[in-house]
Image 1 (cartoon, one colour):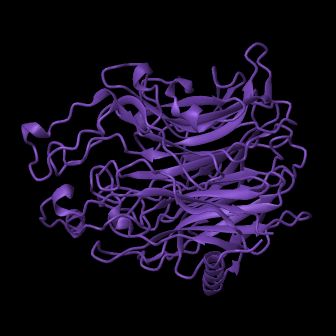
Image 2 (cartoon, rainbow, N blue to C red):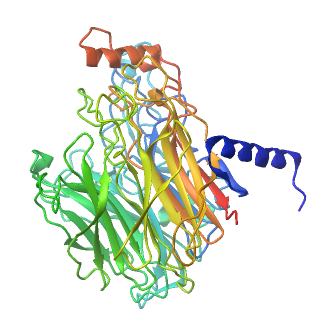
Image 3 (cartoon, one colour):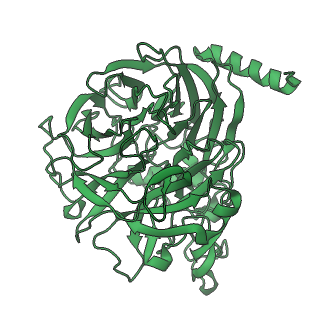
Length: 606
């Protein structure tokens, strides 16, 4: 095949960048090498321009079809509605964005549905608090988030997780890819204002949509094709369910083919106190997500000084091998700056009916070098930065041979960002590393390795995906490109990076990691919590793979604008000085707060 001059130039540039970064160049072709996924929002309206915490899934039986989700403020009122110096969530408006690609990630769409929306509440910049500046959300306004929540007394709440599985037969309930593909979208859910659909503060809900045989633009464009959201969690009045992951057993070789699973952390007792009860929960559905059975798979109690219990557990990942064994991984936190926590593993051999006791696998040191005094959270990039609570949480994939399971190797990769080599002193030169542990015997034993990263990169979040046949590993990470900044006045850098390694068929070990893509560096000071007091980038990135290509999604700030007035005010909160709280729509560029989800898909470079 004859390549264009532009294609040759791009390959040459990728090679030069790889060599400069100390990584081997990977001669992969880009299916959609560096694309915006969150394509529906207006980059010039805060907080509608705020997206973070992405997830992505590939339909194993129709690998040209991808779905992604993120925390998405697209339907919120503009920051300049009412008082221009306050930027709250609009009560009742959903925050679980949904996006699709039907050409292996080359292009993305974000459907527009109808629901409870404040997207058209744009206010009058420069005249805060005037009567004309109020917002009355519409119950039939445009939404780019999951449909059907307002109508069922709920609000979608982000923390997205997506997975494809088979559709059950309408008469027999038997799962088969011949029936079509079902997308599961798990997310947090809140009660719609003045309703009591469930007890407690946050529940986990699952939305579903079917393709027959596969999802198409026409199917996803019609919101009536979405089934009503189903509450997965059992809720008490003090329960805050959080950080869920969803998976569907997608290898037809499995005796539990079609089962769907959700893991999550259940924060109880109003999430108050150092000894709060935080068990890990797994819910199982055997009927395509209509009903769920919940099991507690860890102790509820916490003890920061007991390595078997740790200081809470969260950040779970759930996967299945080709025999239907279910693997649940989670982060067990420890006290310290940083804290030497651990990854734990719980397994089920009977389709979620029973679970093994948690097994501590290996050390995973968090990246908490600095606790911000204003928000009380750990952050890596600097004062008033973005929280990094779950940097050391496991991202896991298993080469289960989906959709058939026939070519499964069942090797397991666990990837995380680790802070064990960081500076114990002032967080000026703290470093972080990407660690990989792999297993070829069902998680009984593990081999640790590390992933080389570019000089100056301080990894923040990382995720891994294995091809179903276990021959390729794809890894995505966000990294800060600047040291810790003691003030908000100095520029900071954030970048998304995608790597690939061939996997040794005998040992399961990754070969040399090669650079597939290095995104555009942006300044994370352009990101923002809704209350403006610090940056915000969410809690994870994500990856998925087929036997021919890998997909990655990451947080991206290339199109956001830093705001010097916001920097000065954020610094004053830490210094105790008096600086007026700025109005973003007056004091800042229109793209302040703009954070996007970018992604890429890359063919096997072998």
